[in-house]
Amino acid sequence: MRFDIVTLFPAIFDGYLTQSLLEKAIAKGLVEIHRHDLRDWAADTPHRKVDDRPFGGGPGMLLQVDVTVPCVEDIERMAETPSRKIMLTPQGERFDQRMAEDLALSDRVMLLCGRYEGFDQRVVDILEPEEVSVGDFVLNGGEVAAMTIIDGVVRLLPGVLGDQNSHVDDSFSRGNRLLEFPQYTRPRDFRGHHVPEVLLGGNHEAIAAWRAEQSRIRTKQRRADLLDEEE
Ligand code: ADE
Image 1 (spheres, rainbow, N blue to C red):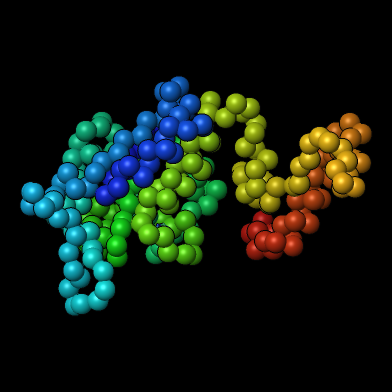
Image 2 (image 1 turned 60 degrees about the vertical axis):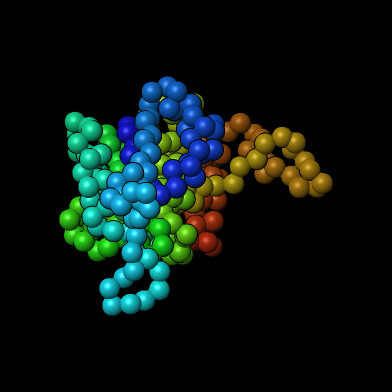
């Protein structure tokens, strides 16, 4: 799977791309990540201006349509297959596990990271990206949101996680739209806090039943909205 990231701050991704799971997925050839500096498409060298004030007034700056659209078109021309285009914005559809599972089926995803007050509306009108938000809060730009999406998607790709089942029990994942149950490891007793007895007995049916119940209790307490969603 290939990601193309359009950003004014490609270096933000440096550490993320060279650590742990993502580095391994890239090394194994399961994922390619290409960063594109929007400034490389700015017309007015040497200033390399990419933003301007909004018509009608108001605070902040907008990323220009005449920089962004040619940038995206050039990236599209570099590859054989068209990409699913995602614009990161707090006005977008909320990213969730279902969307991650769906994106993991794509060969190519382009992530457009806004800054300042975002993009000129004509970028949306012309490119028709899917507008996606990672939550009801405002970040300083789309880069952290893009990393969130890459992180959520890459771990679902076959071969990325060591144990192929390790994301099946995850909270929200396919076949389990509830929160994950609590987990314990050694020691069995720490300062009087004991591991629940059922987990130590080796009765797999009882363990599965306990975990299902714990999932349900936790979901009811913390995220009752998820129980409503479950038909
Ligand atoms: N850019 C700024 N805030 C954002 C958010 N919550 N989600 C996605 N992109 C953003």
